[in-house]
Structures are given as C-alpha cells and as structure tokens.
Amino acid sequence: MAVLPAAAATARSESARPARGKLVVHVRVDGVVTPDGRLGSAPAVGAHITVTGQAQKVHRRAGHRGVAEVMLRPGHYKVSIRLSAPYSSEPRSAVLRGGTSTTVFLIIVCDTC
Image (cartoon, rainbow, N blue to C red; front, side):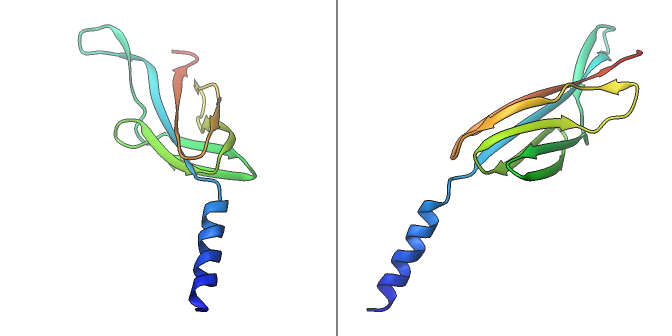
C-alpha cells in the first residue's frame, strides 16, 4: 500500500508544473536577388538566434529552412539574432502559453546594400 501515496505524489508534482510551449522562429534575409533579377528573400540558414526571458537565455541556430524551434516555459520572451555590420534585424517579442505553439518572424536586412 505504500506505493499508492508515492505514485499520487508523483502525479501531483507533474501536473503542478506548467506545460511547456513551442516557440518557432523563422529567419529570412531580405534583399536577395532572385534568378530572374527581382528582389526577394531567402531563409537565413545557420542564423544565431537568442531567446531571453523568464530568467533564462537560450541559443539556437536556424536550420536548413531558416527555422529554429525551442521548448520553453510559459511567459514573455525577446527573440533576437546575433549579427555584424552591415546587417541588422529588429528583435521581436513573443508571449508563450503552456501547451501551445507561437511563431515569430525575423527579417535580416543589409543597412548599406
């Protein structure tokens, strides 16, 4: 009978934790010349993404489609990219709720191109 209280305590502690949410970050480079000579955008493969908030800082790299996914506790986060001149990108805010997915889009631009 001692097993039941331990199992009940484990179930209580797991249900008391807020469910994590998924933050999906899409990064694109703006101002890319397409094969037909028009300006467009392209995935920023390998972009260094930083997510800060809830007393934590998480670093990820964008994959082959310019996308990174991060599982985080619910809360408010700032999403940014580490860049060097002449490139820049505005950081974005994200609100993540437990058990849900939130998507953020970041655009990299060339300030002197």
